Length: 210
Image (cartoon, rainbow, N blue to C red; front, top):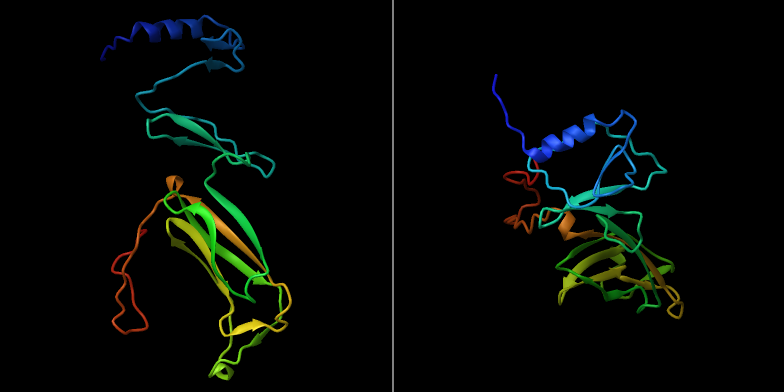
């Protein structure tokens, strides 16, 4: 059988634990431990740390994530804090009285280097009428909304192509919902160039996620 010489600090810690009763609480750098073992200060673990019991989240729980920072420190990410950082954000924009039904360029001011913005839904509150542009009788109009980057920030565009307010004097209101991801906590695959060569269908040579 192999022998192992444990460091003196580990032997001392084990001795302290064995000398306490089963119901006692042990504190390191604290005189009032709040649980079975509490370490008040930095702790460095060079090998695997195994947590045996995982409790299932319920609807009433306030979920908190643990993330590893660039210096290998562990920080908590409390998504219940409205002013703190989160994995993703949901933001609704209510944009009033644009040029008829057209939002050409609304600057959200959100830094495109740090965040990704996705428009998830958009609605307009006015009745529309097809315009008098040539050939408009052969067309229909579907709402178009999207987020794009210009000059380093995320912008929003929204429109009903080939249509406009039936009552041009009415104040139109767009309600646009967005999903905002932090680039620090989401994987960024970058841009994939897809040459279609005039075809209407195609396939990826390999999936970005297996």
